[in-house]
Picture 1: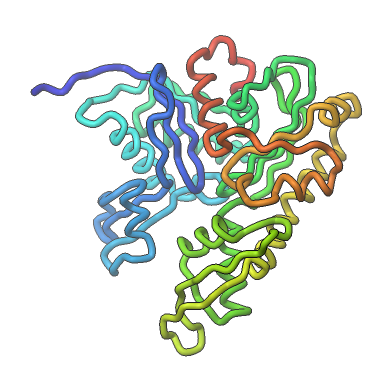
Picture 2 (picture 1 turned 45 degrees about the horizontal axis):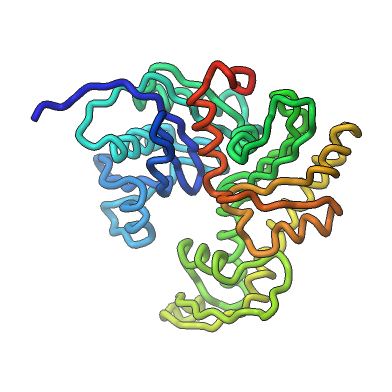
Length: 336
């Protein structure tokens, strides 16, 4: 059966932890980890996305798993291109795809060089025309806010590599704070804490599970106990330990504080009239990090402003990027 050729428009939430793909007219069609498995010598791609994650931290010397994005930006240009191309091929199996237009969201605080790297990767993956949009702007559009109004909206998007905080009005970002603290830094903090205070070495996937199941920004009622498998740091022998949610919360203290302080800094630089709007409308939390238990409560206690968790925070940015793709003419002012 001959392969068919067709032209499609694609929106990509290219995240440090996960990449989501939105196809025009179809919606979000893929949500997979941003990781690629390659042969160490030939650099040939062996797996991408979920299959590559299954290999992560379990490979032998001939296979390497690579996360091409670090702190929200492309750290490995070649592998980033493989990631985009491989994930799009998963969506369009058996089709020779011509990507006419691609909208990619990027952190608001990245440099011109980093923007160029994103654009080049998208073009090398097959896109004829590439548009960029800032993550907090895409998140605001994704949760249904009218970003064109002369009204202040504050978005806190806690992703895998960065936390993007922005005050949006009249289709533009008035004030923004971008810090390289996100889910990856939280996982790393858990890993180092248990190695230092419990003599237990754990993998990245175990750290992520601890964060998801027992992590919190505020005390829990009741506190939780969780069984953890790791390697004894002294003897090197695999062990099982019972860990409390208090220990996990202590491990998360520094990155959680960094996010709360960044929100405070952003509010301090917000013009008074827009600040009054935020006081009335509240702060919206999006991104995977917003799912950390009590994150909204912690920020609310620091700034004394209502804080709301967006519906389905993991897909807000992808939904917003998709809305822009569906009507590029209407959203031309929000594009970078």
